[in-house]
Image 1 (cartoon, helix red, strand yellow):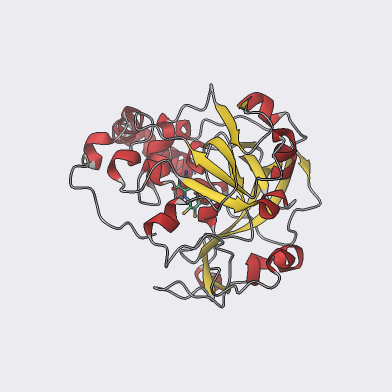
Image 2 (image 1 turned 90 degrees about the horizontal axis):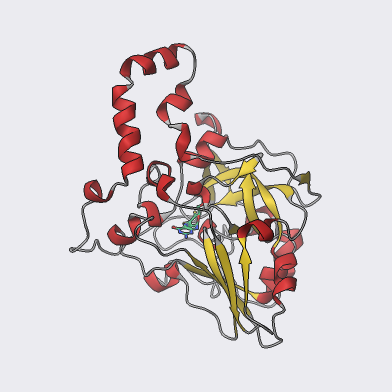
Length: 323
Ligand code: MTE
């Protein structure tokens, strides 16, 4: 995604690399001989990507009827090493390298705004609010690449029901953690923090919108938005806010990070739409991360393939204007 300008006062990334990542690199370099042995034993992935960054635990779930079938899953390695999480840096490998510094316990999610009563949910009780389901979804980034990810979570609507929103609540805003001591990118990337995203109430209540706690069979790795994020499979990936600490029910369309940054490039709706190009590139096709070179490009589907379920939400709307 476009970053308008770099902050002249920003600390160089070499100085803000968290100690854990620095240690990993030191360990990596020191481990030359051990590494060669690991390579010989076939442990290439573990050697290149130190395991401690992931710090996940097993998470049980039941298969969901809302899962997308017949798709080849993107590997765990690609899902966890090709990320956008600007709080940890602007490059695809930065979140995996730097997110080891994120502390995911204790963690609270505050609910405020147009609700009967403000509430705070502890992450462990939030995870038990409803049975966890595994749901395979297509994931399409606005940068024209895609993955297929087996998420774990439950419909956001189950959580919203517990929040008791008032009839005046027309939109939901999600705010991510904003802590430069854990998130080195906050000082070096010139975005308006905290990361903010939002959905119209009916989009948020749609059963496909997932409050997400894990992927494959484990809790979310830090770089994928631990301990809780949303996933909206028919929208470009940037709508799916990570590491959420606040959910606000609001009367008016909330401001969102990428819309603030470049409103002509990143609209509020951001539904996947092959007929509306990004001002700087086509959205007609996408690069499939991890696919063999001869299968890397595929056509992008309207609403990312979820048109049957969600097109009705936008009946009568001009989707070129409301991009
Ligand atoms: N959430 C926060 N807090 N910060 C971010 O930078 N990036 C967004 C979205 N959520 C982002 C975020 C973008 S641009 C994308 S494509 C997806 O997260 C990437 O999710 P993934 O790295 O798990 O694939």
